[in-house]
Image 1 (cartoon, rainbow, N blue to C red):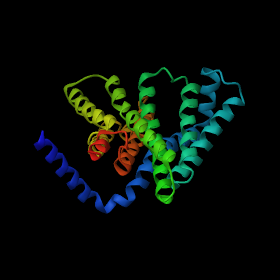
Image 2 (cartoon, helix red, strand yellow):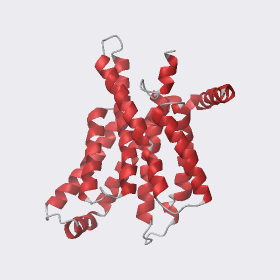
Image 3 (cartoon, one colour):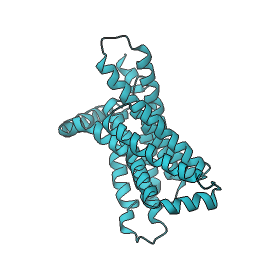
Image 4 (cartoon, helix red, strand yellow):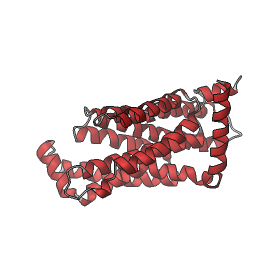
Length: 271
């Protein structure tokens, strides 16, 4: 056990040393990745507006006019709030509005009972919670000399919720698609890393591992650019690709701000 602990500590030191040049830019990269799926979705709706109107009217029963308001409201909210998240302005309000978009789209498009959609979006919500926690972390740094117990508590709880929700990606991964030996191995490794993140044990190391794992997975599996435009799977692959980017962004924020007070990593520091 001590050998494993020494190995992981050395590995964390190596990762810190290698990542030192880009460390100041990781939070900005993470915030951009988190909102990538919202930016892509707003562009997709805007470029296929008539098709989206027809779908909502014909298959979801939206009256004419209401479907216009629904789509326009979604596009404006996603673009404006994504910009606020990237700029790190009013991130709590922006993340809350994007959370509302996730809920309203699930209801509007009738996807609330789709297990894969539901689990993936729980992970996206986890990324948004990490955005809120990052905003509270920055506010605490700006006003470090003032009493901020409630802000600290909120940050801790958002970090815990974000950690737990982020790992639902692998639950969706396990339920989606056919099984193979490589899939079993990847799921097992991912499950172990997810459990470590959820309980906050070696959370930064586990999150960095999942970022690297998902980077390879996204390029190999969700390669929508290699599929013909007319292929029925292209839009699904693109959707999965950008959602995975958003989840990677949440994991990168976890690497930056840590797992929070309600974690094994933090508890160990107290002893």
